[in-house]
Image 1: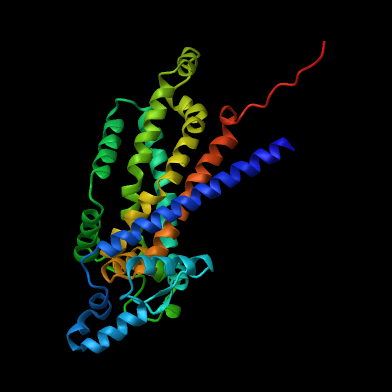
Image 2: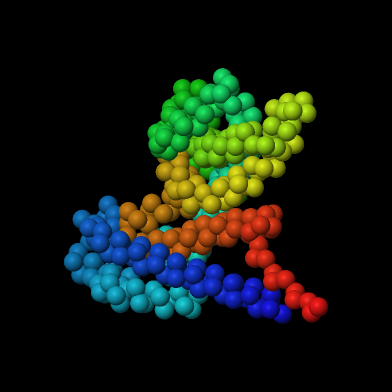
Length: 336
């Protein structure tokens, strides 16, 4: 009974903390949008701004609430949020929830594939580099990890487009499918063909931290008493890496991958812009450039919730696998 109460209190604390984080993220995002020098009516009209009369501008501002003070706009949005409504996007003229749902359905293929491949590739490279410490292979893998960790995302994406799309012609240069073809008429093989280059670019950028962290764990294991005892019994470095190192480094690598979901999403925003991929990242840029406050706030809350779930899963994995992190129960007092 006491354990159930503790679990309920811990869950309540997590929910309260998540609610405060979401409120802070929404407040900061709204404040930055209000501080932007971009006029929301001009951003809404786009190239038609010169063809609209002042009376029409006033009607547009009144229709979308652009002429209200900032506290009134934020309070109205909070009231909508309390009723489960994220508002309406004036860029897409759709409810924000529908825009996020449609765009995230496309982005999850990019994010999920890149996340899984980054984890597998980074973990494998880290184990190999740590097991072969100070070898030529270790130096090559470490150099690759440090180089990709310091490479700008957009630069690598542009380089990939120039090399594989423009010069070699192996991959499409943009979009989630052929231009002008309806989405329902695009075959799965064509979708995957358009997804290969963005996924590969995002994967290369996501492997660096996992590779370096896994290598450090493997090096520490190879220098530990466990490895010395195994070496004394005639074991090879590959045997120690396979029998002890993989299990020793797998959980930290998975935890790091889950905790870096926010960084991966930030990289996907630039990747989607370079490849004109119609996902949630491109919608984020559109919302920022065209002052679509409801859409930007909805995306900010969604991504914060997405990253928080990843961090919670990482904490849960540690507590499930490592018994030392669990709170020890009080020993029973026995009467003599």
